[in-house]
Image 1 (cartoon, rainbow, N blue to C red):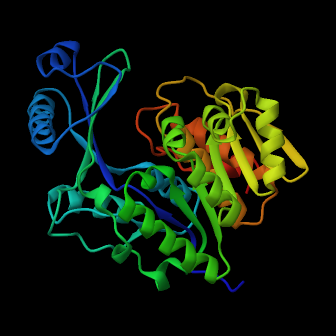
Image 2: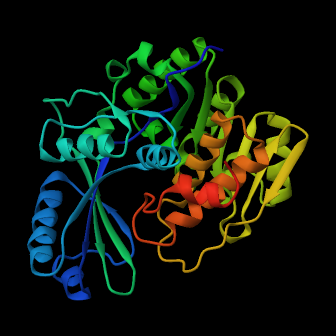
Length: 338
């Protein structure tokens, strides 16, 4: 395969994370379910965004940063020194500009033109209380309207690996966009990676995901619960046996137990990296995928890919937010992994 322009092409839901520190009274006043994630409509999103902004002026700054699972993975890849292209949909509005500039600032290529029809840019409004609880109100907006026309076949074909969020299967047009990207990357000799996103997502699309594994997917990312749901196994040993029978590369994370990497007859158990203080597990899976994919594109052994993933996950759970704050490249260098 010829040298590709991008290490990883990520296809996903383009969401702007809006993060603010609040107190419990704020949650009560605005009827936000503490510690949970609630889907909201555009009117509620505008209302909460304004409330968080007004509240933040009195306390601390409002943080707005590009988010969404695949976008977070590409941020981790960039922190390691990798080169990523992101495909996602935003509206031609202020948050759409925030998303694009945030991706660009982190060294990620994002060339999709903002749309002027349909829903406004998606946002996840995250209220963080002093006890560390994150209460999320998510408006999916434009990101759910990703369509085949948003995929430039020539551009995505320039990626070594295409990384797709399972969440995209929730919308038919996004599913077709994914299939178009898969065909382009496979046609150019690239690999396909699928993240299962969450066990409820697996419950909705299990048969389709298994069909994808059979026909298209080379690399699977899942946590233990998602893998059990996919392979319909109650015991982890059963999951490993099914993953080996599948034959691709399965990277299965197990929180504090680390991860297991499986390929055909071989499996590697990798310990979790040390975390000084666990603050927020949001984004751990996204960053694990970032480290693992970076290792693969650099020809690292599967065990070292797992160690890079564990290192990236450990960094992100040591602070709030789903993206690295420290340079993952420097941390990996220090750990002797690069």
